[in-house]
Length: 431
Ligand SMILES: Cc1cc2nc3c(=O)[nH]c(=O)nc-3n(C[C@H](O)[C@H](O)[C@H](O)COP(=O)(O)O)c2cc1C
Ligand code: SF4
Image (cartoon, rainbow, N blue to C red):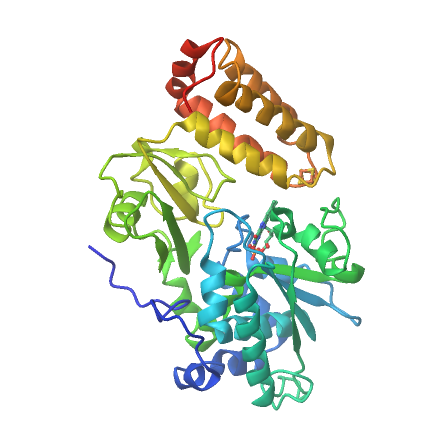
């Protein structure tokens, strides 16, 4: 049975046009910003900390804590919103920008006020041309109405004028551009390769100035806690570790793929697939689910009763990440599926560090030999895992670690799919 829940981030399911400023204000839009501006910036950060909001971009880092790392004092500070949305199976940020651009802008305005930023950036993946166009139109509307810009009519708690410009930047489109330091490099006009840390962006980020990088959905979570109060926000979900609304992107072998906004921790993975997604298209049983696009271990069918929140998915041996659930029914050969994911990581590796650049290539070579060459050999599973050990924990950014998940999880959970291929030693395999 569907939950009795009123969506906050995407309150207009099925709508394909952008909510206008007039419509947004008619439902209380931008009162959260006014309430936030009546407080000191540090109080705003303290409220976001208290809300328990964790970043929705993948790592789940507490948002208020991230804002509190920005040094006080003079000099420019930047808020950069990550709208790269490059994780396969992830399409929630696009929906927020295209339909609810003012929710995002209000969140950006509150976050910018909290950290002392007067120039924010939204880094949008190059393919999201329409999203970029709609966001620019919303910025123009908010400027004309005296909300944003250097002529904003809004006043801060200290009596000064609130000033904020927001720049929309379309990236060229690469998975690595979603990694926050590569994104900063790209924004600066350089090749998108991750930076080594420290220093962290909060201290030296864009143009080496203090910078907060937050995901679109993270920022869209902020207005409601200032409009309706932090206690209202904290009561949504499964406190204390899993508060607030979350958009679950559902795709793969389900009848009704799409974005489903629900409170964290209120339903199980099985309910998401069966009650919201309508079950598998074929009617066949689920074999495995990728919970965070391709960057976290696969969950096997025996863990479908895991609760949909950070702790529940961790308990099932994986990570909630971007909450992009790709469902695979039992027609899927997990050797083939792992190979497709490895091809993706090999292609998207930026090449800056050797274990990732070389390791993903070796993994791909083994999979290609198994699938399209002389077939599976005894010792291949061990060799695949051995290569993963050389990659994981030895790279500059998390892409290296991500690339090992398809291999380690499928060889452990679906060993039979690999062993079935041992029979094809010496001959090309079936697919
Ligand atoms: C390879 C790679 C790709 C990533 N892609 C994205 C992305 O497309 N969107 C995103 O918001 N975060 C992405 N991240 C996470 C960001 O580095 C960063 O943690 C996030 O934007 C922080 O925002 P949050 O705290 O609001 O989640 C990626 C990380 C890695 C390592
Ligand atoms: S882990 Fe891979 S993607 Fe990340 S910096 Fe190293 S080579 Fe580039």
